[in-house]
Amino acid sequence: MPGTEQEQDNGRAPTGFRYIWQQLIISKTGMFGAVLVLLVVLIAIGAPLLTSHDPAAVNPLNRLKPPAWLEGGTAEYWLGTDNLGRDMWSRIVYGARVSLIVGMGAVIVSGIIGAILGLVSGFYGKWVDAVIMRVGDAFMAIPTILFMLVVMAIVGPGITTLIFVIGVTNWVPFTRVVRSEVLSIKERDFVHAARSIGAKNGRLILKHILPNILSSFIVICGMNVGTTIIMEASLSFLGLGIKPPDVSWGGMLSDGRQYVATSWWVATFPGLAITFTVLGVIFLGDWLRDVLDPRTETTHK
Image 1 (cartoon, rainbow, N blue to C red):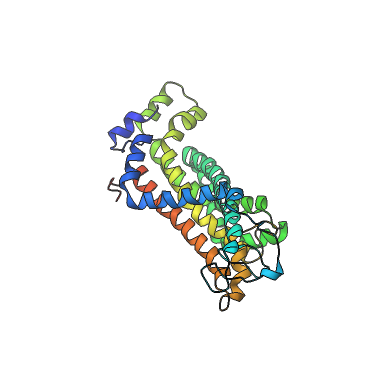
Image 2: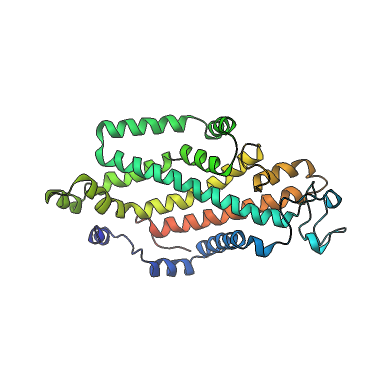
């Protein structure tokens, strides 16, 4: 594989699956993050099997029932119900699907845009680099949440729209990371050797440079999933994200904010779901950075 010898000469730690698995086992932070993320993924996948209520079913007779362990609670609604009598457990479980779909979908969109622009900017340089970087600076100068609010208000809410809007507005960090890696890698001997034997620019980028930036790209993707989940929750909280009958943790927070003093569980449980999911993603992303970044010592405790 191109670049393998160069990576070993530069002291880059091995990054095979076996090595990564060994590092995950010995890392408390990485393992904790992986367990949290895996738990959320399994809950989202198994939502129909883990719930017995329709998350959108309204039952005013059961509104604001407390969790099962509190006075007035029942085992049927073990996390209680919200202000419309909807089962909190079912809504949290199905809300995990939305958060993961939007989080990973938006990162894929922004990652593709950022990777392409970063590769082009770093490889060709000169005026191409200048134009892409100035456009990136312009995007960074615009308050992200304000820009997304304006676009969502014009286009309208929806999962697909939300993924596209968040993805399009968050490509700059990907571009900058990829560009910096390309600027370094394109000056290495194996790239010059490939160029000297007649390799075209497209082949240099795809066969020699791209494989050597994948580790950094994977790290920034992992780190941005948590940020994207928070963005989705923020937009849904403000009423411009996911709309009923789809369930969103941010929307649940918005519904429960006026009942915090009397029915704390309506806002607390979706808030905890967001917290633990993002925490797991951050821990897993930190561990991935330590394992895959060649400039970091491998003391992943």
